[in-house]
Image 1 (cartoon, rainbow, N blue to C red):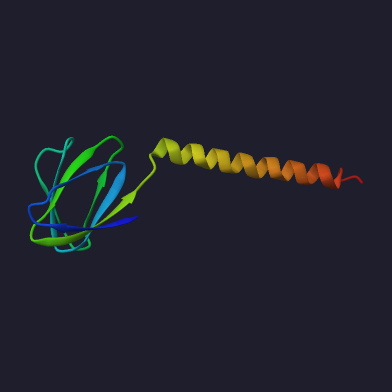
Image 2 (cartoon, helix red, strand yellow):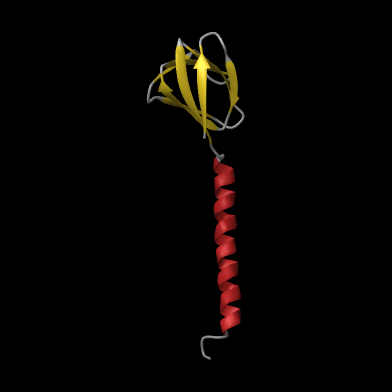
Length: 102
């Protein structure tokens, strides 16, 4: 998570996947995949998709929080990998203790 203090007339380019949340002030943004402009006020957010870029600027002064997010594919891969590691750990523990018939 990154907290970004924005000033008027100082645009910033951000890339997805990420969630942009306006914490204070008003933020204007335009993306390469959305027709039209997007305006965020405090406690409003916009999700940038994987590979999507946005040009962000404050209307006055504003604070934006950028939370990078994993793509759905990466989240699934991590879940599979972590469950596989858990399974392998359980097998190793079982081998150390011997069979259940013991």
